[in-house]
Length: 132
Image 1 (cartoon, helix red, strand yellow):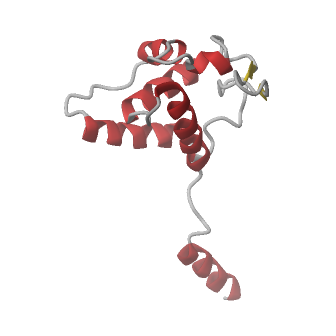
Image 2 (cartoon, rainbow, N blue to C red):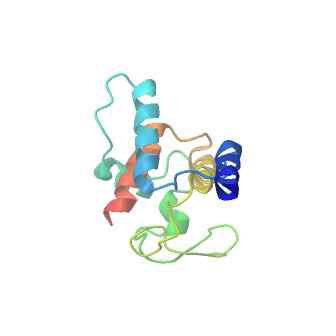
């Protein structure tokens, strides 16, 4: 009986929750993309690759730090700090927590775009990275 009370308390406090997965994040971004664009038809690995490798009016692209081959380690263009591979196929830590993924997108989109990424941009980039 005592265990049931603890379980109920944990559930009520929000301690127990479903683990974040790349798929759950993609579903979230798809829902947001549909709200942003009424004609949203899905994410594209091809668009994600172009976005990842292109500069967007500034000096940096995603590939500036993560390399044009995100299955390899990169190096921060400003600090020189080593960056572990971005592709989940070689770095199982990628896209495992929504909060961390959102922090990554916020920082990097501001560096590359000088604005937040749209849900379509996030979904396209994730689709590309998950395809590697």
